[in-house]
Amino acid sequence: MTIFGEIEARHNHCINKSGGPFKMSSYLQETVCYIGQNEVFEEGEKTFQKLRGITICAKQIERVSHYYGNKLEEKLQDSIAEGRPYTYTDKTGRYYAMVDGSMLLTREEKWKEIKLGRIFNERDNIEINKGRKTITKSLYVSHLGGHNEFTKKMEYYLDSIKNLVFIADGAKWIWNWISAVYPDSIQILDYFHAKEHLCDFAKAYFNDVKQSEKWIDEQCQLLLNDKVKQVIKNIQHLPHNTKTQSIQSALVQYYKTNSNRMMYKTFSDEGVFIGSGAIESAHKHVLQQRLKLSGQRWTSVGLQQVANLRVAFNSDQWNQVIEFSKSAA
Image (cartoon, rainbow, N blue to C red; front, side, top):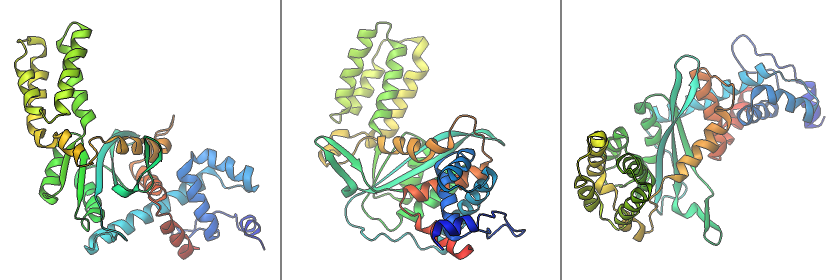
């Protein structure tokens, strides 16, 4: 019997009372997971019908996807509990770790932040065309909820690496965690976040658009030449403006707190990234492309489970799902 014949013969897709395994072949279970992490469950039902001529209802695709998404979570938590960090085949070279969050809609808590980490070796940032590079291989970490559980997941993947560069925004918990656990790492405040704060202040402070743009350009040039202290002085020496006093003070404090992370010329001269665009694009590609589609409202548990499948697929760790399905079939 061919594999597709097997699929058709075994498409009785009921889940037994124990919650698994499913009454379908391992290949079919893996395929269901792939479809479930790739498209809305209802659309997945149509995909099976169109491409394979079999009926697997949307609810069953959801159940199987959640089941294996949970298996991935259990395996990661077991690995963390064992206290042995992830083993890389190649620990040489500089590794980047980027962290950011985005909001997703849940049934229980409305909008809730899901955190995503991206880890990659500098050698995997490959030039594909003149002046254009792409990151060909990354490990991703996701967590819906508080940062303590998220950092435990990140540490599992980071603790065996020595040459680390962190790039993130100004969230205090991120830098407190990095400073405490990875004090020897390079820490960089994403340049574009630093510039964004500057632009927001200037637009509020200056009435004239051209004057605002000129002032922003001047400060950005200073930032890109390791002159963050001069930028702080320039902000402080602006004539008093009651309307913008609070955001002016907040900007000064933000730059003072992160000044050592804003030596952008020094970092650039060493060949180090100064922007976190890679993690922002990852949020869109790895998570939002599937989890933030129109009309979707997830349970918190279900969202994390499908996020785990997305992370496994995009981290080139789909073999875990294959092994789980072979054991369950």
